[in-house]
Image (tube, protein in one colour):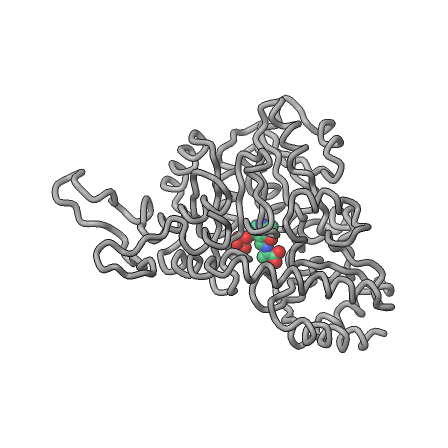
Length: 382
Ligand code: P1T
């Protein structure tokens, strides 16, 4: 099945009791048993829920994986993955990463003895220096949030597999429509499904997909034992959002390319970060592992001043000032004070995340209106 068919059909069957074409919302906490242990495969809704099971199967198919697991948020999915490890283990992460992921590793799991090592992975061979006998997993974001750097997934997986190190790719910025890390050798792929997968800014949700049966078993045990599962209504909404994933992401990418080009030519803009540019440092890798270049664009200002950035952030009308990304509506954000505020300033600045950096999540509106909106806001600082 091709992607545009999978989003609509993979794992989805008419409801056996009524023929309902849409997966029902099984809004129940428990299931009646005929006799102790004699039931229809469902015991308690933390452990299994039919709406969730359909979504898990659909998500697995979209990432070309065998097993899918759903969580109450993207960070709940990361939390489950980190619980696979033990005190003393080291996790190497891209040094440019969502602020909440950084916080989870450095502020929560560090207390339990897990060590996060943050490395610039844009040159995969630099990674080898950071690997020690304690390294148990490499955590990749690509494109990174918010600098849109590109990591060569296949090269990292080659290095890791020689040393029995797991690779997990946070594929949130791509969605399964643009990039499939399991095909490139990753052991685990995770998403904040809050973003492109759901796509309508009305659900917080996360998922993990793997081909590895042992990892699936461990994660399923943790999913039930720790319990950060999504409710059936949210699973239904994500299933509904997925049906148009390919159409939405394609349009976002087309719009983002035009917006990135417009910004690059604007006199108030000093730098545009967009993997679709031929002079982006890892454009050729992006071209190799992504089918399009994504809907996210970050840019910095000639003035390098927060006051100027603030005028733009408050000056757009169609781009709403908000955290999050990947919805049908365009968003504008200020990573330093919003999504990445939990990363110390000196760490942020090492990767170019300045106080004047602005991040756009380009939606699926008419691009002419989006360009006009940005043009007006940029006039406030020109
Ligand atoms: O918000 P939640 O569903 O828990 O997802 C966390 C998360 C994980 N991974 C990446 C790459 C992310 O970008 C996020 C959440 N990011 C934002 C809210 C943001 O605006 O960047």
